[in-house]
Length: 190
Image (tube, rainbow, N blue to C red; front, side, top):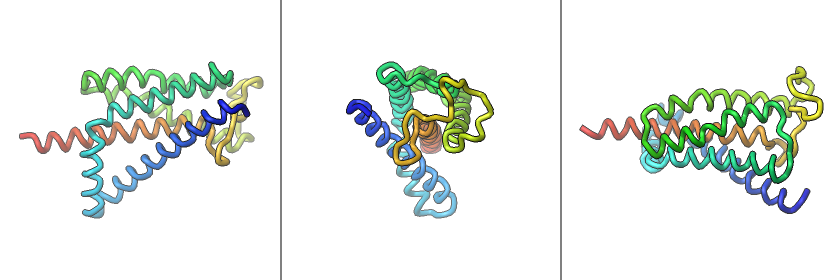
């Protein structure tokens, strides 16, 4: 592995772990806040802090994911498999959709982004499962670029498919926080 690839893998690995931690914390705050008042106050504080920037953060996540996929294919010459292409089809438009939505504060941004996020999470999950259990691959991908053979594996489980899944999950989480902030702001405003 070249030094450049090692540095990129390490950087994207760290970003993936941060994304996963943020999603888990948000999930715990959301679920815990539904039953425990102190956790609900903590959740509301996080929404108040992150909410105003949630759309911009979602744009940044989509842009970093897009830049990462382009880096791996154009600089490192990793040929994307068929499922990688589907993940890109779901991720790339999010940069524009979320970017315009953040800039214009467009009311239907979340709804417009939703199909891309849902499909992206589904494809990424399936791709990750195929990588973990290559025997279940039903011939959907080519022999020359198989979907069940990851280009690299970090920490024993983090692959490009997992990185995409983490990015999609964080974008979804940020849009949920954006909506929660919007609701909280509407409740306060007479």
